[in-house]
Structure formats: structure tokens, C-alpha cells
Image 1 (cartoon, rainbow, N blue to C red):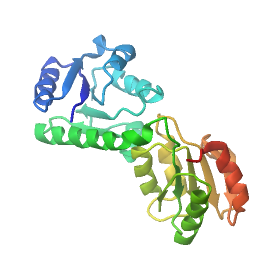
Image 2 (image 1 turned 30 degrees about the vertical axis):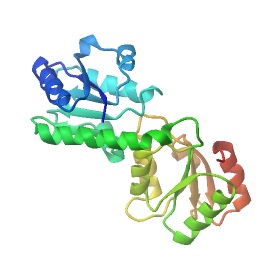
Image 3 (image 1 turned 60 degrees about the vertical axis):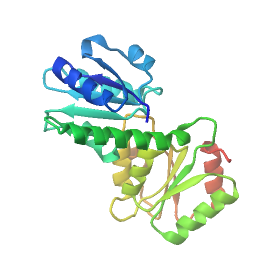
Length: 255
């Protein structure tokens, strides 16, 4: 698989090691220190993955660059692999880990394991590429653990011409938003393994753009002020299908 890989590390020896190992897989490698890279130059390489070093001596520049990459629309979907000797990673980084969109490798690392992780990340990104394409309607993610209700919602969406995917709990939904971009998320709250509130908390920590979320819940005391800003509405169960479809029409495009 052809790939452009950008390595950002202040250690000359580590950059040389990365370049040597990655080029053995016939990947194109561009390596820089933090002093010699900026967002504009990075974009010119059109990277398929970025390997970013975090250390105590960079003055937080690694974290600053990571924030910029995830806030910029043109780079938000680029997979990132962080290499670091830091064992007490911040809450923000742990939040990223929960989405599995950013991998962290502790130094010293096994080169073969690192290359395997790079290959796996490139494969997953390649599989998601068709879905990220802008020339087709993005799907709706239905997150609901009750099978008959999940089937009823997806049947109606299908009849109305909307593409969709399903997840049966919050953890499966996090895996889905890592792999695929959605125009809308329909989210139940009371679910096993990871409930809707826990999903919202983990999803909120992502710095990449968020899909709008409509909550579907039997709870009647939900306070919108306490929810993330990407939660656009709350529908109480049982809800009117026509009302749901009116809301869906605001955010989703039929095939």
C-alpha cells in the first residue's frame, strides 16, 4: 500500500530510525523537527498518517500541534500515531484513546510492532476513505440497544431513502465514529457497557468536528443546558415518527 507519512520528532536519531524503517515498506517519508514544520508545509505532503513525538522538553508544542490538526477541517481525519516516554498522559489524550482515533506508543518500542500498527492504521483509514468522500450522502448512526426499536427506526429511515448504520451501545458507537463520518447520530441513553451520557462525554473530548446528536430517551428530566452543544434536540420515548423525520430532514440527505 502506497502511503505518505510525516514524522515530527526533535531527536535526529529517532527521525533517522523512523525514515529507515518506514522506507523499507516502500512508504514515502518526510521527517521534521518542530522548528522546521508548520501546518501549511505539512498539508503539502498530503499525509496518510502523521507520527508525532511528545516529550517533556518540547514545551507543549506536540500537544499544540495536535490540537491544530484536529481543529482544522482539512487535517482532522488524518490518523495520528504519538510516540512518547510520558507515562502520565493528560485527560485530553486519554479521551482521544477512548475513540481509538489516535494511537500512543511508549518509547522504547519494538520496531516490528510499530510498523504493524502503522500498517493497521493505514488499512483502516483506507477502508473509511470512501465514506469520507463528499460526493455521497453521509449515513445516520442509530445507537439503540432495544432491537425492535432499532429495527423500527432503521426501517423508516430506509423507506425514506436515508443511509444508516447501527450500534447497540455507546462503546460500539465510539468505534463507529472513529471509522466513519456521520451526518447525524440518534442516541439512546439507557444502554449496557457504555450508556449515552458516557458516550457524549467521550465524544465531546474529541477536537475533530462533531456530528449533531438527537437524544431518544424515556427519561423526562434531561436538562439541555448540561448537554454538549452538538446535542441538537431531545425526543422523549415513545416519540412520534413524523416528528423524528422532520428533525432528521434538517441534518440528513437521502440517497
